[in-house]
Length: 307
Ligand SMILES: Cc1cc2nc3c(=O)[nH]c(=O)nc-3n(C[C@H](O)[C@H](O)[C@H](O)COP(=O)(O)O)c2cc1C
View (cartoon, rainbow, N blue to C red):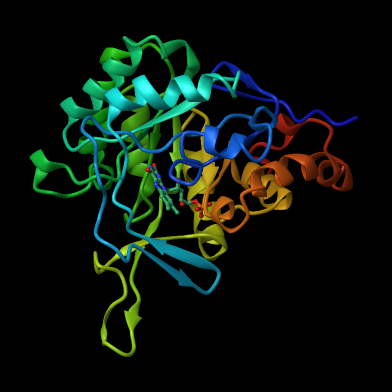
């Protein structure tokens, strides 16, 4: 019998499979299809202070081996999440959930976390996954995640308002992801998750205009797996805190590969949009794939590609 358990920032997961933010709603939608307690955890939809309608449509485009999205952080806002979404989740999910939060200033990030912490739903949250891919309105619109000091300022703000593990989610749209990861670790981050989507675009041949109303969008899906593996590998070498790997994962074999690159847990994103049962199927296949490769315990293979 193989053991699929892993420990992420002091919390034991039955398995390392975590549906990624923005591809799994607030969980209860998927609980209509299957018992989501089979998952290690999941990261809920990126939540901001105010409700956001998101970008104009079209905001999704298909690509070979992936998809582009420019959803623009559509969510009902943190107060509604506390009042409506998390109570619904509590009826169907009994494990710690990863709370994905976003903001347009460091204060906004800390306010969102503070409200979640002070709410009756606080006990449901195991980790904060702090997405620094949003434009920094106080920093000229550049994404927080593209500058080490800016990213570190978000860690500082989050650290101040919660004792729970703070996992910073990094953007791949940078020349050196390791310096940003290191700056976040130095500021007190408990973990690093990566990658968010890669900036891309498509053009409609008939109109000769960009396909997405937003012109550009984020590429995800199998096309980005090698890039994500490379970045997880590099960040694992740079920091001493756990890495949560994602980007193009769609099979149990991909989970193992991500862990060998250095991931302690692995998120599954676009695959859930292709097949709503994708994460469940990965969880179910994981033991057989572990047996095939002679892996008894998953912690043994974290970072194996470095040894
Ligand atoms: C439709 C869609 C919405 C997303 N929304 C969020 C979000 O709200 N917050 C976030 O941190 N990442 C968001 N992401 C990024 C994913 O969580 C993940 O980092 C990325 O898609 C790479 O993984 P994948 O290739 O498995 O999809 C979104 C991705 C997609 C496809």
